[in-house]
Image (cartoon, rainbow, N blue to C red; front, side, top):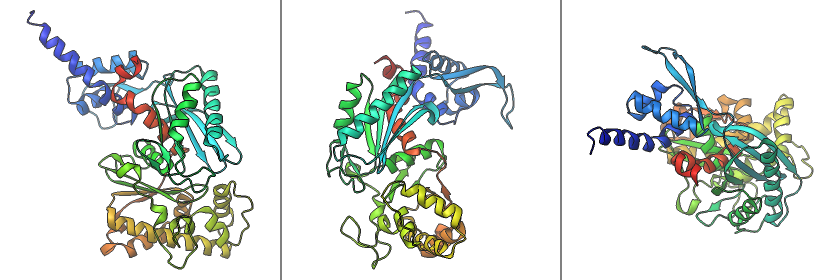
Length: 405
């Protein structure tokens, strides 16, 4: 054997095995230059250059041939790396209480195109999922993009691995609806290839925020959010989404925060789900929400435009206190290094950040949670971005294998 063949083959194999980790570093913004990529991968500059070139050839990233030095850098300026904005996309869909939204999402969590469907969600999941996939297919057709896979976010705990919606409390689906199976059927009927995934909307929001938003850099991230109805939670542990046994972890909406409070759909009373969601705010403020559509928009508008009204302020403070009590209990159990709040909860934080943080600190062990940052979610449509993240994951794991399939 030629004496040079083995070292060359070793370098090639090392480079191929580094493609996935390299793509994830660029995807999450942690490797903005080839020099950083070299350091993060622990490879030679030549290997990092070969890896970047191969990812560029796959249409996944761009390598800027005009090198630039980052702030505080020393030595020769390095080539800039970024995701290819003209590259493939994932199809993401989200179902909520008043319809659905779909998006095409590229690497870097970038939403390329989006469309929404409004109306009451039918009791048959196949109808709304069929409409959502059709809307996504139209976006793909219009944009002419390659689709690497599809992800679906639903407002329910989703059992793993079968993908059934166990508690779709705020939409008309029956418990145990086979949403993953139906979504796969609709995606395949549309002629789309690639892996197909289904997950809980708050879990997927937390994943997106951890990679691209307010949760970046946190090892142990707690996310609590409320959308149109109810309250959900999610946890990222050691940088990975934690879903527990069968995907059912962090159903925080059913923490009791007011034993004498409203009856909850789960059979309990005074749960976060009914004490700290948009309907609770509107009701406490004496506002008639009317039909159960656009509750989140109504509640957000109320906080932003009428917070000076004593009734609105009092209602908001009541929700902040209930939310803070629930967060304190979660901090005592989980000890996260960051908390992020989504939907109406992010708006409550903005309305009175000192009150919320004080309640959490007062109710936590030794007041230690006062040092835990509490931030609002940063991404628009973060559940959609998270749904795309799970569709992108096989490509992030093995770019060559996934794109050759």
